[in-house]
Image (cartoon, rainbow, N blue to C red; front, side, top):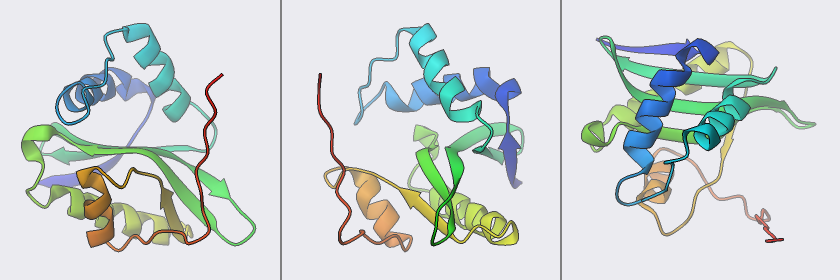
Length: 147
């Protein structure tokens, strides 16, 4: 049975395991071998007042995670997603789309009327989000400066 649950700091070890299992492999190949750095990153995402983290469970197995926060903006209250992923072995099964629908339903019930996220155009996640109704913000640009 597929279930959506809110995750808390109590779930940090489960989150870290699935995060490494997902992002230290193709196509990402991120180097999260520094467990302290990963712990700090996950803590930043799940440990703030407006943090909102969901887990998707297939029976008792954690198969998907969405980490973000609620942002009260002038035009709406948004769920800003920083990380969204499905266990690699469960990708391309429809679980990701189901996960998004469950989150959207939960957000509507909570009076949150938008979901915001960023991704790269050259990764498969871009087409996944487009397929699930996300549109590019016409005048939005992400900027970065290395220092």
